[in-house]
Structure formats: C-alpha cells, structure tokens
Amino acid sequence: MACDFFFPQPGGVECHIYQLSTKLIDRGHKVVIITHAYQGRTGVRYLTNGLKVYHVPFFVIYRESTMPTVFSFFPIFRNIVIREQIQIVHGHASLSSFCHEAILHARTMGLRTVFTDHSLFGFADAGSILTNKLLKFILSDVDHVICVSHTCKENTVLRASLDPLMVSVIPNAVVAENFRPRAYTPRITDRLSGGSQEVQASPELLGPDDTITIVVISRLFYNKGTDLLIAAIPRILASHPNVRFIIAGSGPKAIDLEQMLERNVLQDKVEMLGPVRHEEVRDVMIRGHIYLHPSLTEAFGTVIVEAASCGLYVVCTRVGGIPEVLPQHMTTFAKPEEDDLVMATGKAIAALRSNKVRTDRFHDQVKMMYSWRDVAQRTERVYNGICGDIRPEEFYGYYPGQGLDASGDRVRSFALIDRLKRYYGCGVWAGKLFCLCVVIDFLLYIFLEMWFPRVNIDIARSWPKKVEQKSENDGLNNSSKGSRSHLAS
Image (cartoon, rainbow, N blue to C red; front, side, top):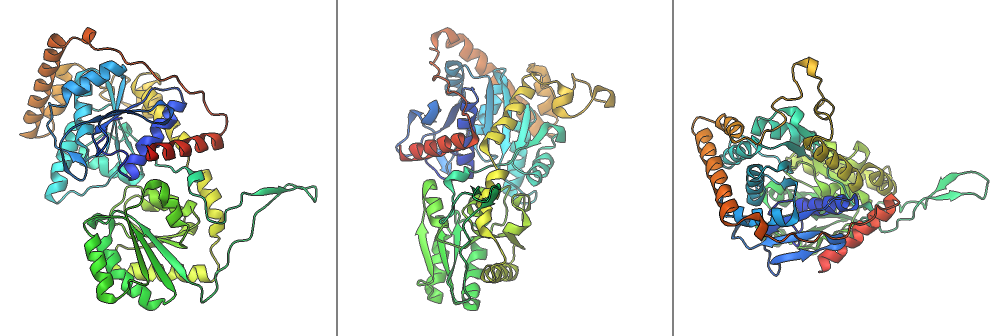
C-alpha cells in the first residue's frame, strides 16, 4: 500500500488503508505500507497483527502531500520492494505523490499495480485540469482501478479516459462495534413463550421541548461545506431555540466559524471541540441526535455511515456518491445551498420530535450493510484477476466472441515499447513528456540493478501469519482493538 495519507493523521483514506490492510493480513497475505514521515514517526513501525509501515523522510508541501520528485523516490522504493518481496503495489488517492510515483516505478520493475480513487474532481479549474492530466499519465499503465462509489467510477473514467471494465466499485466500510449507540442493547431471543421472537429495548423518545443536539465532525475546508455551515447555523438556531451544535475538526475555515459565533453571540449554543482522534469520534457522536454533513463534494462519506451506526439521523447534501451510501429512511437530503440545508435540517428536527424515525435500529442495519471483511474479499478478487488467477472473461465481464479476446489491451504488458505506446496517446505534448519520464525511469532502474545488485539487499523476515478469525464479530473486535492499539502507540 502506497499513499501519503496514513495514521497518525485522521481521515477516511487513512482508516481505509489501515482496515483493509489488517483484513488482508487476516486472510493470509503480507501487507506493507509506504508513507512519508510524520512528526515523531520516522523509519519502520510495526502495528497490530504484524502490519509494517515504512515512514520515508520526504519533504511535505501541502496538506500532508509530499513534493513530487518523480525519480528520487525510486532507490528507496526499489529497496523496500526487494526486501519485502512485494508482488502487487496498491496506490491510494489522486493527490498522493507517493501513490503515483510508486505505481510508475512498480510498472518499471515488472510488478502488478492497482489504484484506488477516494475523491471527486472537476474538469474546468486549473487545479483539476493538472490533476486529471497527472492521473491520466499514471493510469495509462495501471492494471486495475478501484473506486469507492459508482459516481466516483464515472468521474475517474472520464478524467483518465479509462475502459470502464477496468474499474471496479468497492465501497468503504466501518467497524460497527466501534460505533455503538449510547443506549445500545443487542437483540435477544424471547424463549419464555416458546417462540423465537427478537426483543430490543424501547427507543428514547423526545418531547416537544427537549434539546436536540446536532453534531458536525469534519475537516474545516471549503470543499467540506464549511462556508455553507457558517451561513446555516444562525438561521437554524433562530428557528429552533432548543437546538445545540457540537462541531469537531480543524482547518483554515475554523477562524471564519469562530468569527461567526462571536458576531452572532452563539458561543453558548455551539460547542467547538477542535481536532479529535478517530477513537474519540464515537464519544462525540453519541452526544447528539442529528449528524449534519454539508459537504460540497464527496466520493463516499464514511463519516455518515459511522454517524448512522451511532444512532444519529443524518442530514447531508445530495452530492457525489453520498446518495449511494445509506438508505432513505436514515437520511434527509438537501441541495448544496443555504436555504435547502436549513429546510432539510428543520425537517429532520420535526421528524425526531414526532418520533417517526426509529434511530435505535440504525446500528444493526449498518452492521449488516458494511463489513471490512467483505471489502477485503472483493479487493482480493481484484488482485487475483490482475495476476491471472481468474480468467479474463470472468474477471472483466466479457467473452472472446463479443469482440475482445483474452490477450486484449486490458492485460497490461511490461514491455517498454508497449508502455511507451500507451503513454504516447496521452496528448500532443504531454504524451512525449510522459514517454521521456518512462524512459528515464527505465534507465535509472537498469543503473540501480547494475550498481546496487539485488543480492546485496537483505530479505526481511515475514511476520507469522495470523489464523483466520472464526466469526465476523471476532474479526471486528480484533480490528477495533488493533485500531486503538495503533492510535495509542
């Protein structure tokens, strides 16, 4: 796994990589994570279950992304790959320099590659145009692509001009055991009457004058809808006097949010917690009744699944892949506009006060919908597909008689001339630049093989493989313990 974004920084991508890696280890695979050095974390770290993390000391330029150097990462990457006997390189996130460089170098070394896209990008602004061109460069020679939602798949296929059959949709998941409601009691079987009826404690009912708490946990950036939140909070509090807000998170928009509170004198109704650790998210969520998610763009939105698992009614914007995440009875959708967000929040408050929504059932429903074990199984199938363990017509979903044969372009060749043909079609000028980068990368690889031969690199010992868990609950408990142990280290 190669990505700039990993623990101790909290976030959806970081949690995805950790949980997926631990589940793949449970399934008998060896997983190594390559990321940059964080404050206090440099070198090699071992996490729960033998998960090995290489913190490479590279210069960070913006939002924990390292400065792209294209070639300087190659010697270290080659050493790690040979030491750990890596067969597949799996990169994450479009804005990760380590991800893109690792995929480029892995193809030069003759390794299979997979890319997972966690975000949505536009097509018009300068930043998106440059990012899309970079993505097209890298994905022109990748074996397979994974997206976290169908909307994300459409976005990635258009941005990188990909064959849709080379892109799979595998959503995020949550460890439901780590996000239990405050008064959660598991369903029990009523055997007194000789039947098998399930019984659960009655939900907590809200009265017309009871205080309703709205929780917001997000990075305070523009794309997360912080400006929309700043505009909506005074109007929501003016219309509903018995409502309070809890806001957790940090970012450049935190100053604007604090200025709004001072300007409207709302410090007694809005509690700002600042940044919270991932293991503290559940403790914050169970203090509320509604989770508000005003994001302007989102490929999946793991936090809304965590909120629903904690028994919160979700109010979110209808953008990106969010409508695919939860069923309608758990959410109220709004347009990414101030008026519509205020109206949707008012509907959610009214629904809770009338006790029409059974939030006490959300946890069990989310637990049945999302599982990291299922994500790991589907990702493992992608690995088997690109390595040839699954027939191409079965993996890609076509038959030779339909115009595509098993030796088609989807099975990526490692030959340099074939790679140059794929890169050359990326643009009049960009194609030539990409071909030049690939040729230099290939020559650098030959130089490293000659001057730093593989026989001089010690092979690292593998951690003893863990036996597969017997039940889903046992696996979830182990994952939650691993997450807590890692974050505390």
